[in-house]
Length: 485
Image (cartoon, rainbow, N blue to C red; front, side, top):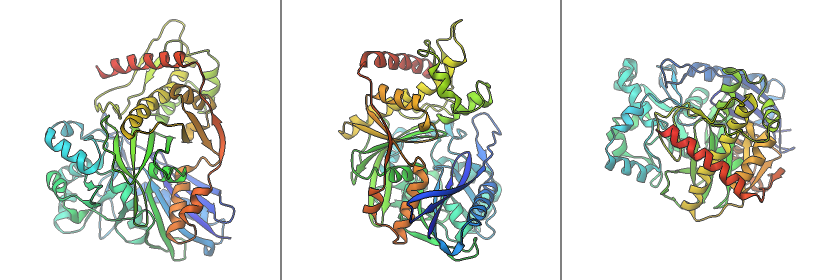
């Protein structure tokens, strides 16, 4: 027997997934809840020490069920854009992790001159937004005295979650191309930290990690009592793109997690969006760089969690499918869950969520259905823009993430998009992509073999009643207009 363990460090949980290389399947997993803190309105933080402690606990518990000698490697996939700063000598974080959802630097982003915004877009493929890492790093340097002191003494490390875990596990300070491409500091054409951008934000390159391929070996850890390579690293959405085998230009996947993310493979072409989509590095295999268009919706699964925990509309997320199907339609109700502002294609940092269309006949089922429908409408926003940018017409989108288990949402998504939705047999696409990258890194699998492994569990085909679903979407656009006021 031989295994690869994938660390899937997400926004709300840390998981370790055990992949059997003979069965070509996950056979076990461990999960730890990750707590979030909201010190001020719009601020989101996590305890970096808890992130690492969760990782170690999940790894140790999972590895205790197999022979450690059979573990070939450990892969990492992670929540992106989240920033951690720590002491290079001790490994101790100097502040909480500033989470990708955090809006504390939104006002600063508004002050960046238009000409420099265009320069950032040209170099990094990103729009200027508090979502990305650069302004978070700048905020930490300006507001945490210990960070500045450590920087002056050559002891400061700043990076995304993957680089922190790599450092803690191996002692090496590195990240991969996909995570670097989310910082607003990395030139995706030259594949280097960009000096002009670093100078503008006042961030020295010395505090940033070395950038490597997604299929590199990043170092070795003895956390399990045996020297094991940490190999195969990618941001969660890019790992999902690879795990869904969207490896040819024009192939796309959608992931329903805390947020919702649509990635569209553009091959070796850096496709500059004209519709406020993001251009990003999709993944890298050895020396090959694959680019992608991406649309990011900040709140998807988080809206389901909000309806469950704050509104007490249901006990389990699985209940939402039954509730949505218990009413013939949304009753004119639309929900825009802009808890962290609006992402693509609107990019309005100060937007807040709204519910419209409530009448005396509205009940909890209508609201739950409208929350699910909001994901489908947001995906249509992204899909039509990506098709315009890329020149490809999508025939199918591959879906994964927690909400992809909801048959109502998958069918409604297909109906709204007028595109088939392909749900895979293995829905843990993010961890799976990290496993494939790790296996390639240690020569346990070829890229061609990874491409051949995906299997479809169910295909959702769109309804022929286009007028009905176009009218639904028009109602959503009216709700968006109100949200943007």
